[in-house]
Image (tube, rainbow, N blue to C red; front, side):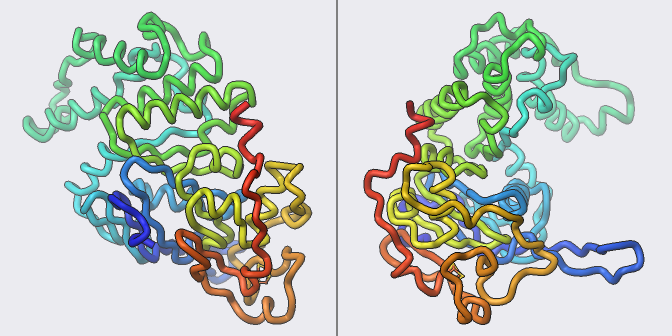
Amino acid sequence: MSNELKNTFIEVSDLKKDYQVRRHFLARPATLAAVAGVSFTIEQGGTFGLVGESGSGKSTIAKLIMGAERPTSGQVVIDGHRFGAQASASEDAWRYRALQPVLQDPYGALNPRMKIGNIIAEPLRIQRWKQWSRHAGNPAADGAAPALANSDAYARRVAELLELVGLRADYAERLPNELSGGQRQRVAIARALALEPRILVLDEPVSALDVSIQAQVLNLLKDVQAELNLTYLLISHDLAVVAYMSTQIGVLYLGQFMEIGSKEQVVNRPAHPYTQALIAVSDPDSGLDDDVVTGEIPSPLNPPSGCPFHPRCPRADSRCAESKPLLRQLGPAHWAACHYAESVVQVHENTDIVSAIAA
Ligand code: SF4
């Protein structure tokens, strides 16, 4: 897929993550394949949207890319830095600065007792502490902490970051409970930008916000991306949010891609019944059937035979139950894992999926 893209910045290759779990205390450990071999690329300045239901593996992929978890196999290459099952401390330190998360819950992510200015400056202080610690030994050991709080330099940087996210400098003196949900998410974005990262991992960044506020925060993220040439990995259960933000989309189910490609191909020419169901949920006027996403996603501890989607698929037949479809290319920048993708594909050149957000 990388040949389709210019300026590949992140390349994820056959990434897998297994967990050993016990169904109960006396049971033998069983393997849970949370991520079952995914590959994709993100171009510099682009947004890759990972969409799927809870349990699809999208948050695990984000953790693997951020380094919060190690993959069982496969690798992630970010701007030439290679991360596999092992990574050096220096490479991890580079990744810590290059990637920053913006999480779902803007209130839970902010310490309620810290002023906004201190919250935004905290990553700068931690980074300065690490630099100081490397040069001067471990400050925690001798009780000597560098005096970093409330310097003019920090105050200026905090004011810059607040302005970048559309808040006045005097917000630095407020507490999180004095802010609205949208303002708190702006603060979380400002904090994520403090170390001048090159990539933001946006994990359900607006799902905790009122619909009326969601567009403001998404538009802010677009503006910041354009101004700072940031690359985004966006995770959402909502295909409308993903379609509004992304240049490329991957539709995940049980840790595997059902469909992947450019936003235009996946949204306007969905070739997998699961993608069509997600579109139907986001756009009830699409004419597509959303009934297939009722019910539970199967347990990854006991995945279905054949096509992983076949127990919920309205088009499934005996071939689907026996034979697993490979992810195969249907056209430029478009892949789907369905035996019948060519007959499943539906063309919606004027899909209205993002209208609720863009309005
Ligand atoms: S392979 Fe069969 S079960 Fe799987 S998505 Fe296609 S039609 Fe449905």
